Length: 203
Image (cartoon, rainbow, N blue to C red; front, side, top):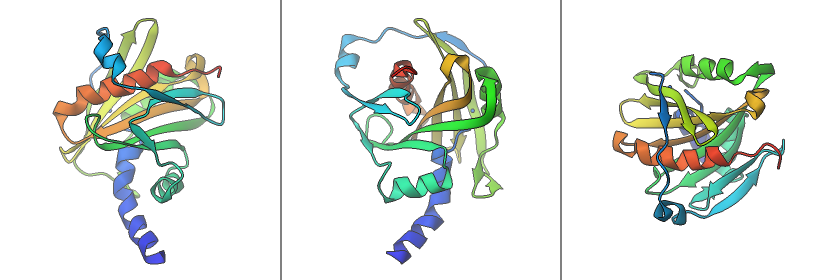
């Protein structure tokens, strides 16, 4: 078991790129209406964090927060609150919820701009072949969602959405899911948007 744990510690830095946030072009878009068939494909579990913030997470996402991989990822990134394994067609990858503490209350735009300019790292070194693909703002009904998309080695795409209570808080929430093909980004975005729209700060 010690050997297995040592191997996992060697491999985990590679996985942190999939979990720790990082996304170029401003955009404000209108979201298309979900069709009934899309809504009927997913059922949800409610996840509530230690601050009482709730998220409706599709049941296709298997909670692995408390298994060995989840615990090791949390050791590397203590801001991780939830880790789930998601199968196809939603990326066949890891989904995460992180809450980043700014140490003081800040506006969401300030925190969001910092994440956009953040340079991803592999261990202690800046990740090579990393690039920001897109970032921006989406207006969906009465809600405003901030997102960013990054790519590593032209093979791993990370899609992230951000939320903050009253747009002014010390905590910035990041919802993240990865995929292996640019063709899957839209599907992953749809998956994440459903969760982002469900965020409730008064659970």
